Image (cartoon, rainbow, N blue to C red; front, side, top):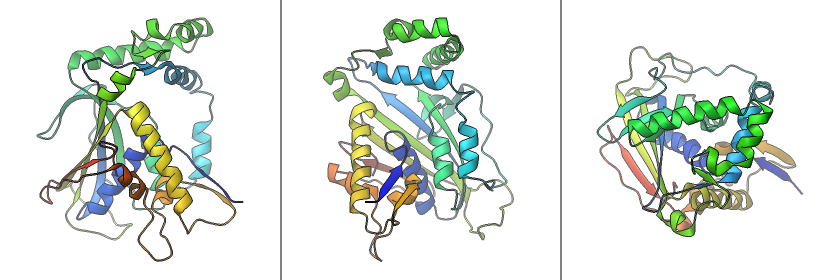
Length: 305
């Protein structure tokens, strides 16, 4: 019996990984860099994230210096990734993203999306990727940034770490609760994942660099339901279905990068794509003109396909 390990199968890894790949496929030219923005939206009853996620954050922040993740990544990807000469713009800790499609206050997104995309495109044409989260107001962006700073400092010490672990509601100002969100809060929650891709109209060979600033852009949005329960469960189950139904997996066992496995060709037929399974939850697409292309895809009353 073969064993296959595919890491990071939930939200937000799948939307980001497949969203960047979608940009690569649809971009008419050479894609140079992508900036992504996650917006989490709550309904009129608000939203509380389950404290299990909070406890995971505590462990992740407290073990960052000793987890050996950098060494593991270098072992998996020993060769240096060669990217385009033009890097994405340098952004501040909090900055105003103001485009006709999106107006939000952005800060770095602390999830693993960027590293996941880098691993998936290791043997592919590599693009720069920067990930951000978006907030509706400068005030909330500043408040969250302050909380993250204090949280990351306090988890380094055993005494304060125990207090954080014992009182998630109090220490997170009710952003996290042991009870998690109510069914009504889940029903009212949603997310939007934005992808702004920048590149060049002309194509060059894989190892040849472009000169000058990008002259073309493409915008993709992924809209979905509650990220913590609805979207995550849909991603995980669809990933399992994609694996079960694939007919061209390697024999024995293997650890597969997410996108490599989701896009497996199936004996000469159309690729077995994870969105074929996500599509069973319903989808709709919307395209604009090819120069500034916006794609809206919905699954499970709206998740990325």
